[in-house]
Every structure is written in C-alpha cells, then in structure tokens.
Picture 1 (cartoon, rainbow, N blue to C red):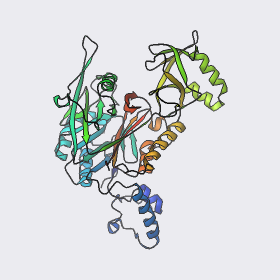
Picture 2 (cartoon, helix red, strand yellow):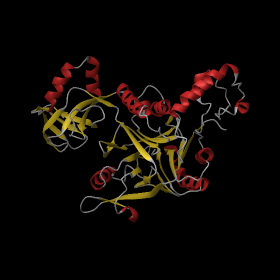
Picture 3 (cartoon, rainbow, N blue to C red):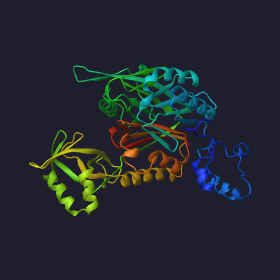
Picture 4 (tube, rainbow, N blue to C red):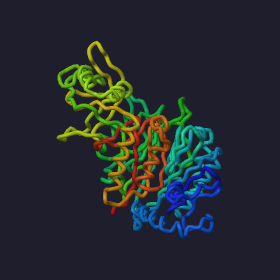
Length: 460
C-alpha cells in the first residue's frame, strides 16, 4: 500500500493503537487488521497481550451496533495524481464495504479540479453506482485527519438497506420576484416523511444557499440539512460539484434521505456567550440600534468594562452576536444561539451592524470566539453523543469552515481528531467549506467558522 492512504475497517494498527502499546512506527508497514500479526511482523503476544485486551475493551465500548444491517466505509488518499488517488480510495473503501454502495460522497482538493470530469466518470465506474455526490474544496477530511492546502481525495460510502435516497441537482434562477430554486424532482412534491433529511453541497458563486434554506425552513419545517459550499475556487468555473458521472460548475447537488437510519446533528459554532442576554428594542435590517432600551454600543461598553483583560482582547478581535433561535425557553446557554459576525460599529449613534437581519423583540447576547471556546464546545457536544447510552454512530460526515483547521487551532487535525478520539475511528469524510449548512433550534442556517457534523446511527 502506498504511503498517504488511510483506511478504516474493523480495528487497525493505527496511530492510536501504536501510541497505546508503544509499538514503533516502522516505515513501509501499512495499517491492517490487528489479527494479521504475521503480516505486520510484531509479536503481539506475551507483553502486549494485557494491553491488547484493555485496548479492545475500550474500543468495543465505542463500536457500532453489531446488529445493524448498515455498512459504511471511508478512505483518504494524498497521492498527487488525482486519478491514482481516486482509484486508491475506491479500492480501499470497497474492500471495507464488501457491497455495492447505495450512496457515495466524494471530496476532492481544489488542485484536482481540472481533472473533475475524468474523476466523476472514474468513480462511478469503479464503484458500480451513479448515486455519487461531492465537490472540490481547499481542505479535505478523513478519519482523524485534515489535509489542508495539499492534494487529497476522500471517499465515503454507505450501504444501508431500508434507506431511500433521491439525488438532487438544483439551480438558482433570477425571477421578477427575486429568485427561485429550480430542479426539484417531481417525486418530492408531496409530503415528506417525518424522518427525512438532506445532504447538500453548493457552488458559492452561482447558488443562493440562503434562499434555499429560508424556503425549506418555511415549507419543510424541521427537516435537517447538513452540507456546505465548495471552496478553493475564487472565480466562476473554478469550483466543481459531482453529480453522478457529471462534474458541474454551478448550482447545488445533494441527496434526499429517509428510512431506516437515524441522523444525529452536531453544529458547533465555536463561540461562547459573555455577559447577559438583551432584548432588541430598536433595529433596522441588520443594524441593532438599542438593546434593553439603551444604545447597543453603550450596553457593549458597560459589559466590556466588567471583563478581565483576556476577555477584553477577544471582544476587540473576535466579537460576535448570538440571536436566540427559540424564544420559548426560561434560560439560554451555549448552543441556543445562531451566532453572527459583528460587521461594524457606528460610534455616533451607538449602533452595531451584524452579518444577518435582526428584528425588534428578539433576544441576543454577545459572544467571543477563540480556539479554546471552539475546542470546548465541540468536545462537549461529542461527549453528549458518547455518553448518551444509546446506539453509537456508525459513520459521519464533517462539513467544517475553511476558517477552522490550522487557521483556528494550534493543533493539527483538530475536528476530525476529536471525532476519532471520542467516537472511535468511524468512517468519516468531509471538507473545509466556504460556508456550512446545519440546524440550530430545528431551523437550518448558513454558518461560518462552524463544524457541522452529520452522524448516522441505527434506529434501535
């Protein structure tokens, strides 16, 4: 096996295993099943046996339900040749899945965009399915690993009996009324099942994702949407979307899913609230004029004076405002807010401009963002899943902002690494997006600096 290829199936002699046992990382030895000790060449008996037993006991606590009929697989390759990388991940993922996939999700680094047409054809041929969606991105995610600014291909496969999918290929068209989303399949015109959800990938320069999310929040309330915007291309035609055998330069692609699978949503916005909530008493479009009957800037200054020096620095560098999504709560905490950037402050009239519309009567609270807050929030959310007492996730898809990764964290592979650490080496793929989709308070939004994670669990 070539270097740069990561695979996930069963329990591997991966970095976690090596660290646990103190096994040296010998160049040229690929991760394989622990039971294949003859091929690995290590004597895993005697002194290693007690630690193997402890390690497997720990792993079994996080393992997916053995009774589930669903199978998932993922593979990541950093081979600089895009076609060779695609062939590698197809081969490795198929070996894990041992079935024809019902759905494939493909993420390809922006460096490989010129080969997108060939990649789309190759992946469909290699997998034996055209139910493939995906996109290009400036960063690619695999199991426990995030590849930034370098070539990579990541593939995620699902074989899930009893789950029904409908492939989506949508476009935005300008109309006299402002705009419309076109391309919905006729079979989705009626009522949607209560367990339905969407996985969606969009091209940011040609598709109005905000419009789609707003319409679906109104027309299909409670249907969660996970996904993100393709990234790495800054001019029209540079990003690519994958839809079956085609590589597209505009619009959005996705899949409508329902049936015998449970979606668990995690949306970590990487912020924490400071101070106390305020009711907006005067606002216009995206500008807050008054909070609690006082100029918004005056309320901020009064809060600022009570903060320790470190918090004051964060306010000066990374100030945000969180809007409560559901007002029908007695108290509000982290995770109850839709966080938006502060775009500007007018010192003359004390107004604060946000990166979203705001209305009089809504509840807001100031927030700050740093790597400590982002790390703590994601850990807390993943630990809730781990300690839930129910079936653990079988697989996941990670849609992380391209402002996370090395731009936010001093530790490499932060988000993917936390998922692997707390939920085990479940099949995982994803991208660093130019905007992420995910639900907060049963409504879907376009986020920034967020990790939107779709986890797939058995229903029982």
